[in-house]
Amino acid sequence: MKVPFVSFEPMHTEIRTELDNAYKRVMDSNYFIQGSECHAFEEEFAKYCGVKYCVGVGNGLDALYLVLRALDIQAGDEVIVAAARCIENVFGAIGKCYRTGGDEFAAVVFDPEEDRNTLSEKLDKEIRCYNRNSRYRLSISRGFSSIRDDRGKLKTTGEWKYEADTNMYQNKMKERKTHEL
Image (cartoon, rainbow, N blue to C red; front, top):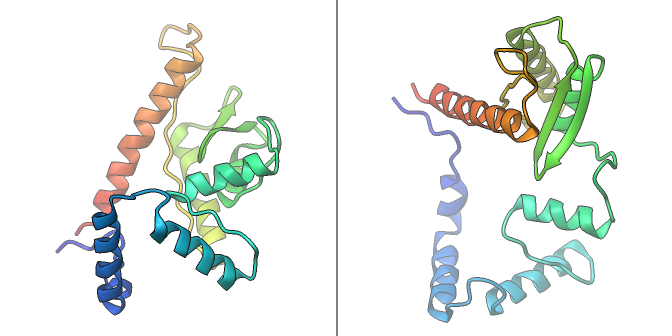
């Protein structure tokens, strides 16, 4: 039996005709960005929120990026989000947590006394604690990398980041498979 990772079917079923009509209008107009549907949404959502303006964006990351730009948040400025707080709680005493771009964070651990599995278990515990006390579920995919190669030579930033990204992607795939029975 396969358990879906997430299903929007109940929500879509309720407004299926409205969604199909909107999709058809967008397809027929060939305005996939900006067009009249986007402008109508922005006006309706602004009114719903009780604000003067609304800007429609492609995804949540774009929205966060625009907010950070509008607030003139620069590299090195502290922005606290749930994922970063969980990472900081686990790694803060033994390293530093940095936002590396978009929704990605790097925890640089200086000479860790604990192995990766122990650190990962601590992060899982922190996430479970957060999820018990929050209405929004948090999950963090992680990828580990060492700053030195097997011979003890320092890696370039690109090398260890690539290794961490590759490991993170592999962990995401494993996590998705755990949702399938």
